[in-house]
Image 1 (tube, helix red, strand yellow):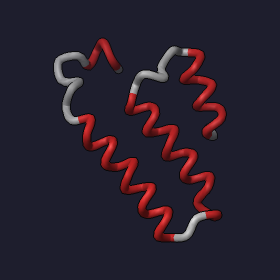
Image 2: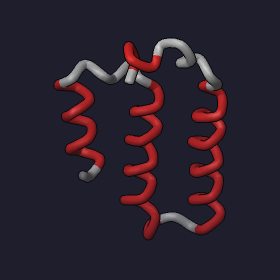
Image 3: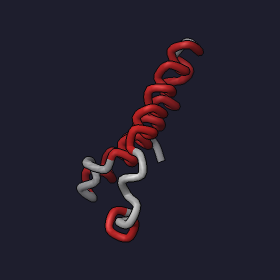
Image 4: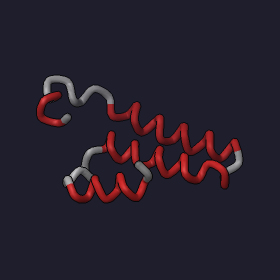
Length: 68
């Protein structure tokens, strides 16, 4: 699945408000652009995505069936 396919899926399933799926989309886009980026730029963008995922925390505990 490429980033365009995932973006369409997110729109069709009304999942654009799910930050963990948006992080996945960002990772796919980053992977597609990797050859055009310097190693430092790639690492910086990857670290940014990682930090966003870490900031999600454990908000989902107790709601697993509802949100996943």
